[in-house]
Amino acid sequence: MARYALIAEPDPHRAASLLALVTAEGLEGVLARDGAEAQELVRQRSAPLLLLTDLALPRVDGFELLSWLRERQDSEATRVVVVTAFDELRVRAWQLKDTLGIHSLLSRRAPAETMRDTVRTALAGQRSVQAPPAESSSSEEERQRIARVDAMRLVDEGPPEAELQELVSEVAQAFAVPVALLTLVLGDRQWFKAHVGLPHALARDRSTPRDWAFCHHVVMGRESLIVPDARRHPVFRDNPLVREGVIGSYAGAPLVTPHGEVLGTLSLIDTRPLVLGTEDIVALRELARRVAGDLELRSRARQETRDLGRARHESALAQGTALTQVRDAIQALDVATLLVAPGRQPFAGNTALSEMLGMPLESIPSLTFESFRQHVADLTADPSGRSLVLDLASESSQGLHLTLTLERPRQRRVRWVARPFRIPGGIAQLLTLSELGGASPREERERLLRVDALTGLATRRVGEEHLLREIARCRRDGVACGVLLVDLVDLGPLNLRHGFDAGDTALRDVARELESLGPPSGGLAVRWEGGTLLLALPGHDAAATEATRERLHAELPPALRVHSASVVVEGEEDPREMLTRAHAALARAKAEHHARSPRD
Image 1: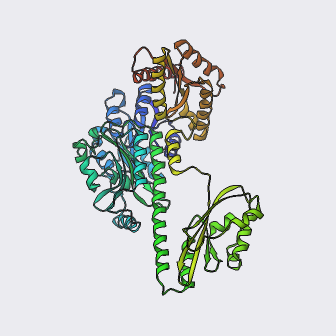
Image 2: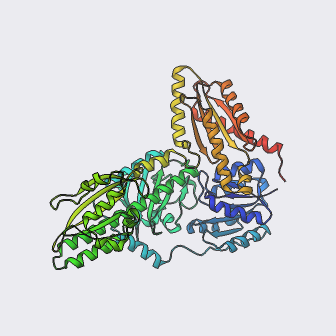
Image 3: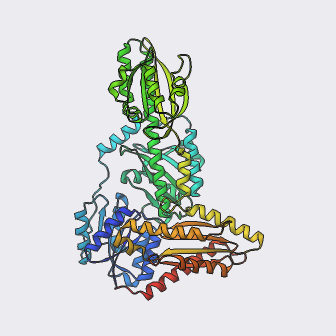
């Protein structure tokens, strides 16, 4: 049996921690970011001495990986330690421990010392599997979470908000699934705040019982969950929504606010098995984080509006009391804000205003409005011209909007917005200065879905669309279309010796070389999956594609070695069959490399 430890863990930071742990025990650590990659590594190297795996893995889940491993004759001595955040999955794994050959089961929340002792026990051939205690949030923590959702007033009986509906529609289209949901997990049910693609009955009710909800597991585990094939999954195959054919596969990421509160999930559902890679789950998790932040900002804005409304209509409040309440409210805002009392008298600002304008907060009440706007104008390129334009809104208007460019303390475009509101004794104004120039939330979501954050190349989803389009064009024009598939040699050992930053740098360097080889018309370099890159070569026949592959090897520096395979679409061949041939050729190249460089 090969003396190495296989770590099946999608999260790079956790993978690095586990890698350090097994290395300290004298084992070579090999990383797999999903279940399919773990299977491929076992095929190439034989069964490992130790397998550390999560149960929620992309492409092939942990249960299926363990079942497959135990069917191999060379896996009898393999020690298996399961580490997962999901209590229900751990309980089911405990029930199947003998069938799956599990030596130990650990919660993701287990201390590092417990993890180390468990690995040592497993390597000694001893089992420490016992019925796992439930470690989900306590009833009091869950009560506080639900109370927070109620306080934010996120559940309403009106139709879904148009902007959130647009969001889930974009997500469903981007991930090529029929169903996308923005879900809040409540006491006894899950409620769909926005949804697309649901069957009529579910769309009408906008909820299901909580014990049917895959999203319940995401919220309680506070982790992203992917179930590639729910119909074969030992935990989810008996779920009513799975039996009825509504859910065939699932991927969900928690809506975690900037304050660490889990509101619900952003999730994807398909009736067929999901083929999502680690990069897809990372993108989904990032989108969920942004959506949670937006929900919190919306709630805060509604609360502030209600507070200001009460201040306007409660005539019994004195002007000073009202201004003090508003002053306290704007301290929590991230937008630079000035509160102006009736009579155009600056009353108070917040920290964001002080940082943007370099103005001490304590000096604001002593300023006149004219001196304040001159201070702002002095930070622009045209102080004399801007000082007359910058002003407050008229009392009868809806507000004043202006755009200016500040040159100091650094250059930025700023939106000046003044809005009047009534308080006892007159009209006060809120003046905000917000920075412009960044991408809109929709543009940022689109960028995350189409551009790989590490290499800057197109994502696999974009690559598949582009490749199908170019193959169709080449067929119409009667020319060939080639594909070059490239994989960085020994990426795992590179990460082990020098850290993940070194591996990331190597991937970026190979990506730049690959981009430079693409034809000017129709060529596209793609981050295909993990350490694998793809280059589309429309108009290249077999000879030209192979020449491009050889040129890549010749131009890469000696420190960057890659496996590669070149293929060409043959006749009316299905593009997916061509990609299957490319993957098989790449796997052969990697196997030949390992045969030439045997490991201890």
